Every structure is written in structure tokens, then in C-alpha cells.
Image (cartoon, rainbow, N blue to C red; front, top):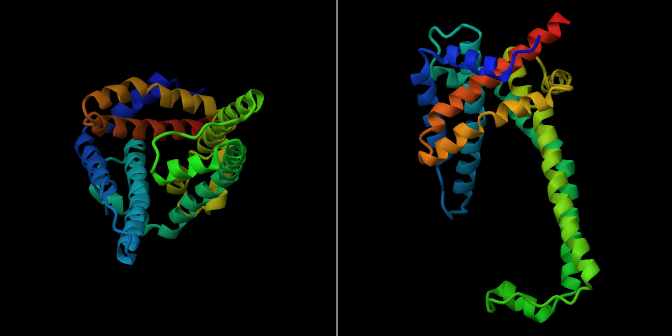
Length: 259
């Protein structure tokens, strides 16, 4: 029988008991590294450094999942900041492949979304004063050009854009939920291939996407409170959510093995 959201969150807090300091420290380190900005420097060295920081963030994220995994599995003794090194010590290219697979799964929806937006833009331009539009785009005018599209066409364009945005959000949400367990699966099974992890995540999440969505939404009040505290509250919330997500995964695995 699946545990309720309240039970998952209680288990997460229990797992974090006595380990809040390393959890908050790791979240703070990850935040500081993610916040590194190169400004408007587009030199080759700056681009390379930016890519390197992105790669490090991917691997550190995995290390954080590994840390939460140890806590939730009762292996908290000795768990700490050094768990950040997990991905570097366990087939780092596999976790990079996981990230690239996520992008690949998002690609079809992204392409269709931008094709639709492009079509809407073409219709808009067809009914616009081109000279006025060019002046606006160049910054020489603060006024948008008048559009002479028929009312029905303009309404259709608005509906098209709204439908595209909603469809893309639903698609992205479905992909994110369906394959949400891949990183935890790769940590749980170090020798599993990325493609196998995606297949297993899809199997585990079949019919469970709304359960995970409900768990994530249950943290919304905490997120709002964290925003009020100028982000400081996220240092508490993110470890809490991280452990709850691992507990959710362990619940899925336990119930699947029971059946």
C-alpha cells in the first residue's frame, strides 16, 4: 500500500534528523556555484568556463541525490559534503547522458511549439505596417505598428498561442513526471544503462504521475514562505523536498516489488 504525502514527508524529516547541517551546507554550495555569472563576456574562455560550471552542477546534483538516498536508506553515518563526489566516482558520463536524454525527450515538443509561434508571427507580420515594425524593432520608435488583420484571424492567432503554451506546459510536465525517477534509479543501480533507467522510470511512474504532482504541490506553501524570507527558507525546503522525493521513489519500488 502506498504511503500518503504526509507519511512521505514525515519519513523525510525523520531521515534528515541529525543531518540538517550537511544537507543545508550542500544546498548552499550548489546554490553559490549555480550563481556564478560571467556577465556579458562571450569570449571562448568564458564560454568554456560556463559549460564547465554547468557540467559540475549536473554532477553535484547527482551527488546531492546520492546523499539523500543514503539518509533515506538508513546509511546516514558518515554521509556529508563528500557525497558531492558520487557522480565523479561512478561513471560521470552516464549522468551526463541522463541530462542529454532529458533534453532529447523535450525536443519534439519544443520544436512543435516554436513552429507554431513562428506561424503566428508570420501571420502577424503579414498584417502589420512593416516600416513601423522595423522602426519599433530597431528601437527608434516606442509604438507598436498597427495590425490590419481581420478580427477572426487575430482571435485565431491569440487562441493558437494560448493553446501552444498550454500544450507545451502539459507536454513538459508529462515528460518531467514520467522520467522523474531516472537519476534516483541510476544512483540505486550503478551498473544500469541510461536507456534502461528511462524505461524503468516510465514503468514505475505509470499511473503515478498525479501522485508525484500532488506531493510537489504540497510544498507550495513552504515555497511561498521561502520567497517571503528572501530565499533563506529554501535552504530548509530543498533538503526536505529532496528526501521526500527519494522516499516517494522507495515507495514506488517497494510497492512494485510487492506485486
